[in-house]
Image 1 (cartoon, rainbow, N blue to C red):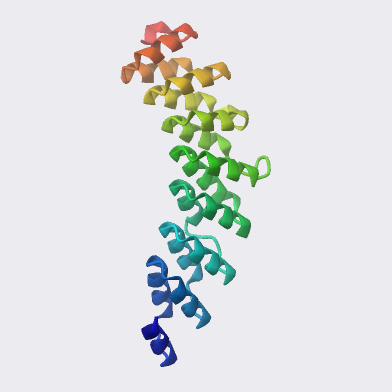
Image 2 (image 1 turned 120 degrees about the horizontal axis):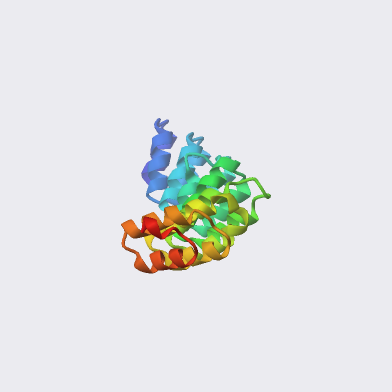
Length: 211
């Protein structure tokens, strides 16, 4: 810290690179010093802070005007950093970033973040259907249940994905909620030797000639 202060006092350049290194290392006091001395690159630094899970540094950078860019929200959602996701949403992010984040959280099974993203989006602002497929692939039944009311047009694809991965509970849930595309799902279940799912699909009207 003292060395950084000395270098800054003597007109050292390279503040942006120094800021990124300080953020990466989680050095809050150094980050504060560099920001106070006018360091640039705050948007990139915020993404670095999020990647490292450095909540306090992320909050500091936002307070100094950093914008949420470079996949920061998606990464926080993927890693399950609920508090950081909440912080970034409060700053304001575009719908595309929310889409990506919802997909990541759904795939990784972070239901608290899925709920947070849904709560912070008006109806129709984000694509819940792609997230439904991601949750089905990941085997996250509770998230599939949460997304089903808004992902109706993607139920058939989700059924095929769940059948391929062997997620029996999700296949059952999707069938109960009217998913079609049983024949394609059957083909996937047969390929992967998920015989319990094969039997379930046949019992629900899939074409046995495909088995």
